[in-house]
Length: 88
Image (tube, rainbow, N blue to C red):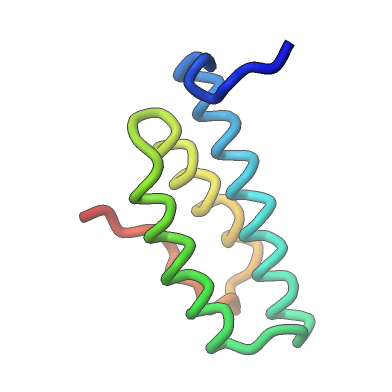
């Protein structure tokens, strides 16, 4: 039986977004450090990605997305992503 994201508990939404964002951003920072993508490409990605997160996520899933973002970039001090997503 398939479940939509709306059927998840707040805790499950948090964990889902934390894991998803951790994986995506860890990949981006790793690719940058390996020289696969440029600093400009990372910054361009971040503009769209953070806007998308802020637009679509609310409540626990937004908290999880932001926490996953912060955790993912910690091991990559040279990654040109901002250290956190700024909420408006």
